[in-house]
Length: 107
Image 1: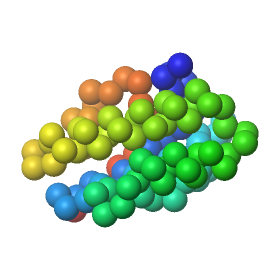
Image 2 (image 1 turned 45 degrees about the vertical axis):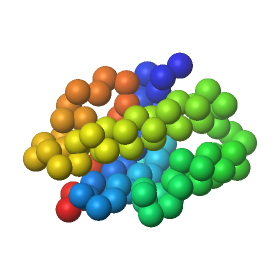
Image 3 (image 1 turned 60 degrees about the vertical axis):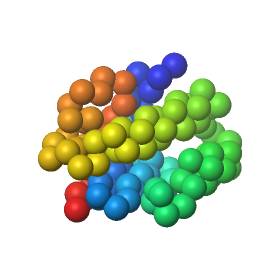
């Protein structure tokens, strides 16, 4: 199960010095509800903090938690390879079919 329903949305702050990521849950009325705070990589071990925060969500399935952690890893790896490209995150949003993103800020 790879977030194929786009139930979760990654909120992204893209910078050449750091990457901020948070996760929201998409509601039926097309609004979103925050699930996590922002984690700023590489300033903190966001993956570990995200894993811990998701473990405190008893309503979230283990499969969804794994998909979110995998998505987080994918975004970090993409940022590492494309941080200096002009298109940056725009290309990731355009090319991704399995994850839903919302660019909150770009510096």
